[in-house]
Image (cartoon, rainbow, N blue to C red; front, side, top):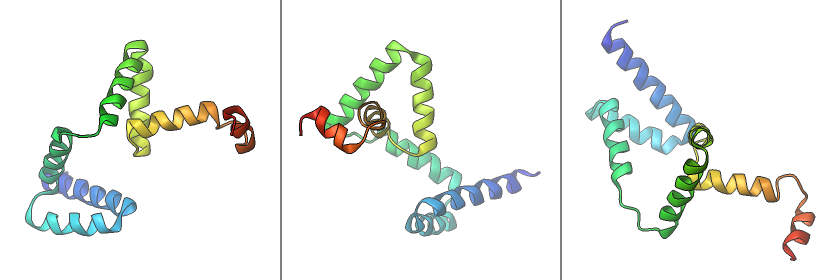
Length: 118
């Protein structure tokens, strides 16, 4: 397989994946692909997103939580990050899901209210 074929397959898979998530984003990505190689756009987008300064205090706190989990159990942290990535959710959403599972995931809403005192 040539490098061009490999690039075309990668671009096709990327576009198909984005289409499955959001049709509007797919249209935008397709338009960008006409002017710029999608691989280059992908790297630039991820770099921009990673470098973006977040103003929310919550993001710093989530980072603290992740650091705590990593310090307690690095293997668990690695699996946590991978699962969040596979589910397409943020670590904050993953932590929320985990906490919700522990507190309410195995009991009814009524039992949850009783535990919380609602």
